[in-house]
Image 1 (cartoon, helix red, strand yellow):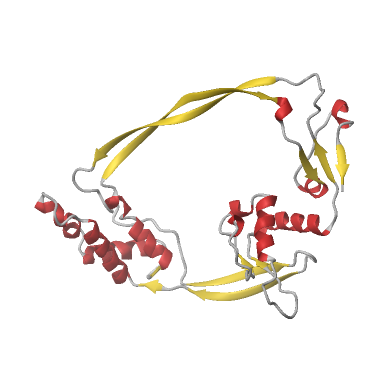
Image 2 (cartoon, one colour):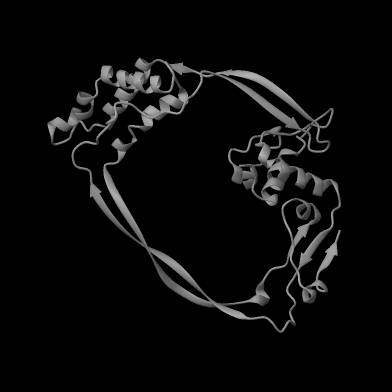
Length: 277
């Protein structure tokens, strides 16, 4: 929402859900810019925006702040129009033609063939440590707390699984045996044993929310009433010319060169490079 122009000015905390939310300087600038807006009618000290992000992304934010606070030099490159080395290429646009083959499901899916569900270990109580860094000064400090996750007994999980099996059965199936095929095969007591065995294999006796979802996801195949194979065939639609004269100018900042980028140039191109503040 922040990078698509969600116009809410009372933003004080930004939590990037995934790395791609902060994978370019433009996105960082857009998100931070909206978070740094001063709310209408704000009185008192200047508000601060807090970004909860992975430590691996901190350098990107720091470089952006450095570029904003410092008037950094940038090295730019552009096309030399009268160069004798320009050339033209022929490019092709394609459209993908799809071919779909569907195969209806016959009979029942095989569930819990191993007698348990593979789980990743989770904990009911989690100690959380968050490290903060001020972008301007580099000052760092930590905040710690304990998070108590909601837990479920094996019986509670088994009941939800049984309800999911009931939902996925068709009470109007032409074959009467199919109307209760899954609930007949997996009553609550049997499901409870599967849950207990699965939890025991990872040293647990109760299930957290994420663990409960793993058990319900194990029933996800029931929603596939048919299988579908899709094939994509590229079909050329347009041929057109591209010239090196059409290349866009680009630039790189001094901060980027100091961190993770470099620039290559020849004696012939050095004279055409320009720097500006």
